[in-house]
Length: 193
Image (cartoon, rainbow, N blue to C red):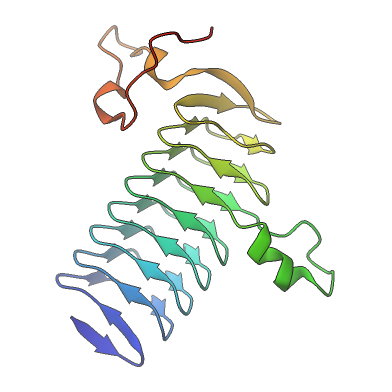
């Protein structure tokens, strides 16, 4: 483990030019980040994670194993991202309803974002404060997420609306469901349509 200036990074890291890791941060093995990544203090990142160029991770975040955060993402303080989740390019997560309010910093602890295991967040998605994205849920590119996304559901739009269940998706090229093998929750036998 590499320790320097109050932070710790596990084995086999790839940290590219212009990236900054603040003190109190702990990062697991096989971490990779692009150029100009900022990881704020007291954040914990698990094993086999990657963060794309020009992304910012706020302080006091928890990011579990095997998470992929693509380029130009903003992940604010107190966000929790669970194992195997995937954030596409330019995902923006918001955690304060009223940024100029004197209580905004305190409120951000109560309006944190939770992204559960295996969730996929498409490119250019904006997630509003206090939202939870369920296990194996998918949020379509360009969506504005104004309400929770239950496990195994596919939501998209502005504001986000339920489209279908993840287990019901079809390949664009007549192949099998592209997500079936990644599901961490068994499909329900009686699926509402």
